[in-house]
Amino acid sequence: MARPASRENSGANGARRGGRRGAERARPRKYTRVNADVVDYKDLNLLRRFLSDKGKTRGRRVTGLSRRHQRQLSVAVKRAREIALLPYVGER
Image 1 (cartoon, one colour):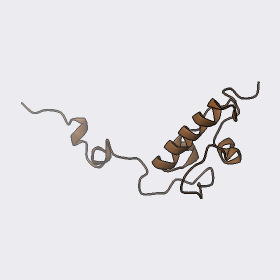
Image 2 (cartoon, one colour; image 1 turned 180 degrees about the vertical axis):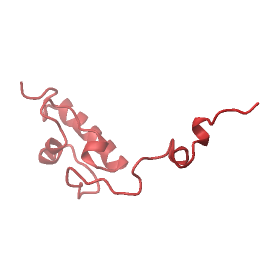
Image 3 (tube, one colour; image 1 turned 135 degrees about the vertical axis):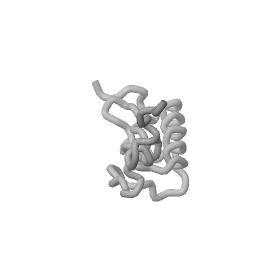
Image 4 (cartoon, one colour; image 1 turned 180 degrees about the horizontal axis):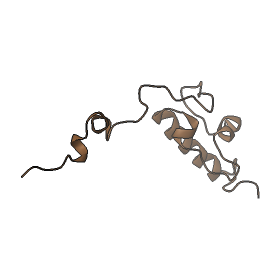
């Protein structure tokens, strides 16, 4: 008995299924890259660029940072909040 065409055998669209979408074109950076090798928790001007107005850290897809810099950014924000250089919540 013949089976109907399944999703994985659906031709050209099925070949791209499950992969990264838009990998062939570069995403424009919404924020400037971090020029330093290490993100420092004492550099408040740099840290504030990557926080939303509510005080949340912006994600990698928004900031355009590499995985390493995004991780360093999150650790630096947490350290700066712990010693009260940055607030936990944003402006209300």
